[in-house]
Image (tube, rainbow, N blue to C red; front, side, top):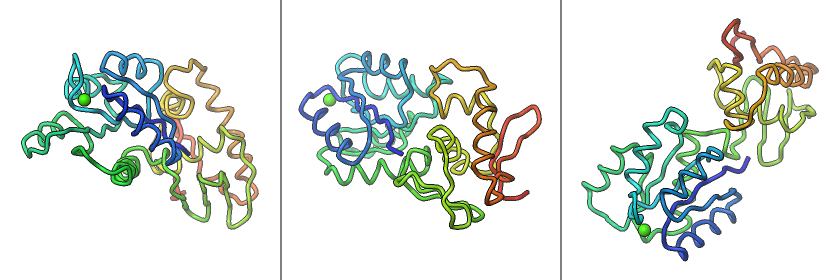
Length: 229
Ligand code: CA
């Protein structure tokens, strides 16, 4: 599934270059020229990752990163910091504020794409195109296909996203509210039983190969994808 990436960069030509390159790589991009604009974007919808220039007019990239990390809603958003500085102590300062990775200008588009992929794999695997396979259930995000013991299973788009999220976060329990935030977006106001409706549909879709048993209800907590039944 494509990732939504917020690019914060005050030089319009570089902003354009980075954004176009990310779109070519299959991502969706959101753009901001300073921290203020970036806050507005983040307020409207959480991106999967932020590519953040260190030197911005007004609030610096470092301060912006610090604020994202200080807010419960945004603290888990992965950040890749860009900078013209190559000094080791700056790099350390960048990583200390909570950036996940750090890239010194100039860098090649390939380099940035590789770093983004690595960070997403670690921090937001549901935003990558990596095939996930657990206990005979195989999900291919690039082709939007799900196979149960080799046989195609038909899933609706929401059930597909739900399964992708659960499989990439296997063995962990998620509350209905957390699933709403992660799959529908954290500014979408839906009732928690919406999750139950889609879990029911998902189980139904997985029934023919018996993989519905991997979607477990955890009483008074939420749901979990588990291969150990
Ligand atoms: Ca700059």
